[in-house]
Image (cartoon, rainbow, N blue to C red; front, side, top):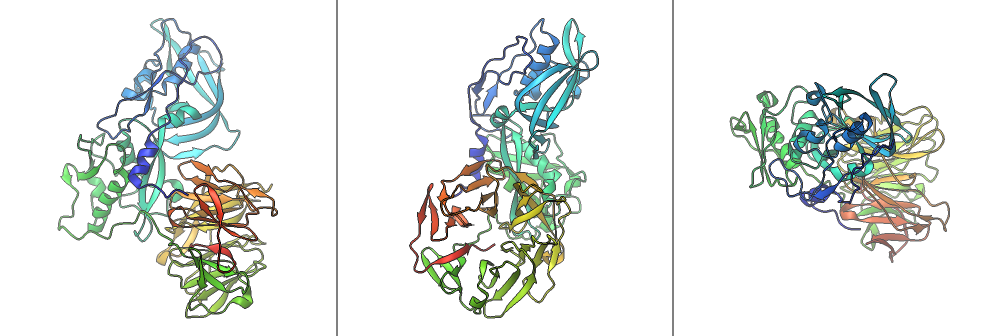
Length: 583
């Protein structure tokens, strides 16, 4: 598996949309809306941090003598040309609509072929489309459930002898192909509760001059809803904090200057001011054309009045190391696995009589959690300490241990609760609230992300269909988990049984083979919507994922490592099972 690219390189790769040839707009009278116009690769964009080599569409303005239907179709297609404030699209408008229409308010992404029909009242037209996703003005993308449809109505009146749109909703409409060409994922950064880690928040913005401004405004607006309450920010949340100027200029030398309104920094202490600058630097550095970020307040450098000492820099990657915990298949002892070496888990009390399954451990390799074979009891074992049974249930999921030492599991039995057990096993276990879980739904797998701010969940509905979701982890004092936020759905190509984190922005999901001949194809999915389906492996029963793309899979007889795109069986000193990296 290819190791992840550096953050600036990853940003540049994301910002280059796939340039494809599109058909020229035909204004002949078909009822379906054309989805393409002439396209060419644009020259590098200057100030404003726009990306290079971005396809630029050139739809025509309204033709003289065009019908109302043709004007509506032409307007929709002109949504592919954001240059000059969507000037071409505005040529199809008249009256107050020219200035009032806000194209950035929302982007509706549709699949299939939309259909244009006359509305119920004179002069109205309705575009009926199948919605795939929506993106709001802050770059938040929401996937629509399969089969979602919508009507989009405009009013057309004759102005100076030509039909023009005089009333319409804010926003633009793009096909899935157009969206892939015009938008690119970008990353905002927030903090975990301890401000140790910088937590990525993926957003989507149009590839054009002004991307940097959009990112800065989105950062000031705050985290995505599913991360609200799970992450921290140095900026005041949605309370008027904003920029003092309408844009963030980027100089020819690659310096982006973010000038904050005075209210944004008012009352901030020394650490908060340093963190404001750090957050903005993490978010904007690496965007095409930006090499350095300067943050000012009303034109003055953002610095504490008394100087002060900068806090430790936040980490953008949370390492889980290269050592896994597993179970000796012959003796049922807990063992450590690294490379091809298998060694005893030093200092851990003997737990072989419990016949552990699905073990995990903390990053210090001093605390271990595992289930019994019936998956009805969760046990903890401490190096140079004792062991204890901390939870009993009827169908527990494989435990996950977060960066704060909490061991997580879900009882899929009668009460269907999410539990978290503290590092001090003598402390009370917590029931984590999941108020969004609907009747008939159940969590069949849960793993906490490397920074402890998110959980990957496999959720089954009442009919047994399974989906991947990601929720934020809300914590109280002393990092005590209290709730999982309403999650976002992450599309997968196959219904998963298991989901583990493969980094801060990606997960590996798989189903479990039904027998030794069943060939399973795991999938690596990213929060930016991309995915990679791996080569099949017969009899796959489990997976484990670590730093730098390390990915292992298990069958009843062997342990495999993903090498490039192929699975290679590992020649081990002794057989091991149920491997897991910390987490």
